[in-house]
Image 1 (cartoon, rainbow, N blue to C red):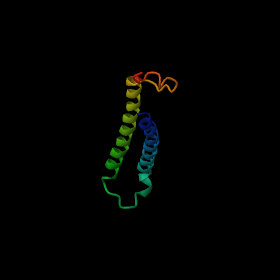
Image 2: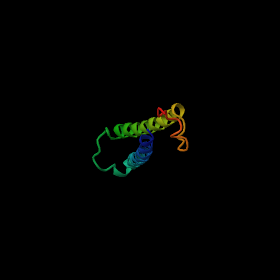
Image 3: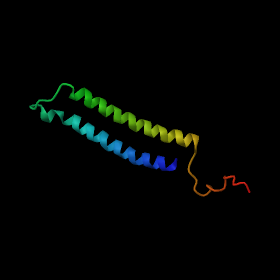
Image 4: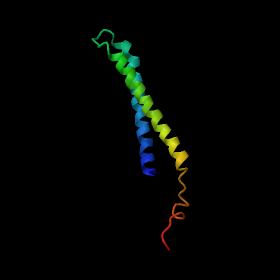
Length: 86
C-alpha cells in the first residue's frame, strides 16, 4: 500500500503538469484567431481542464483517507505487531 501511495505522488506531479499544460493551451486561444479552430475547442478544453482538477482532488482525497484509516507509516515498529505464532 505504501508503494501505491508513493506512485500516486509521481502521478500527482504528472496531473499537475498536464493541468498547467491544458491551461496554457486554453489561454493561448487568442493567438490563433486567424486559423480555423472548431467551435468545440473551448468547451472541450475547459472540460479537460476541470477533469484534471478533479483527478488531482481525488488523489489528494485518497491521501487523506489513507492517513485517517491507516495512520502514518512508522518504519521503527513495523515488525513488532506481527503475530508469528511463537
